[in-house]
Length: 133
Ligand code: ZN
Image (cartoon, rainbow, N blue to C red; front, top):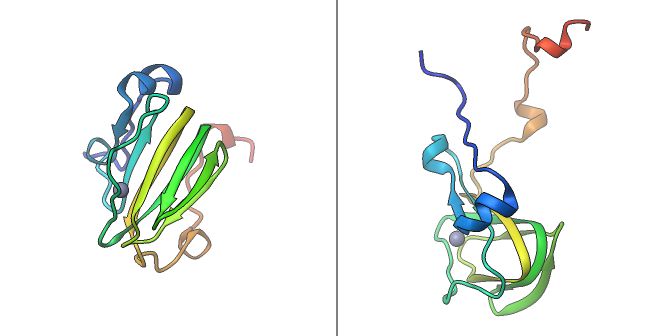
């Protein structure tokens, strides 16, 4: 029977991810509504181009370090704890200046018709740590 979940172990952020620079997780996890990349670019590096997406919005979650971001010609500093959403059609670029790691989540803009509170349902099952409840 096929499992209703998938798990991917990428190792440590500053070890395995830093060695690879970038890990795409969508195909390995079998994602059907998003693409996710984990990124730990070498300090001072950047993709030498600005890109946009036709249909997808991107959310960049900065986990550590700092760097620069550019959207449609506007440049600004980014750092650990910042979350940037970029609309479809907008040109964007990112640069690491100080051991920056980040997650980029790509989903089709306008595709979310509900969110957690409208979609979540409590089920009858319990996890082992809920025995006493
Ligand atoms: Zn992109």
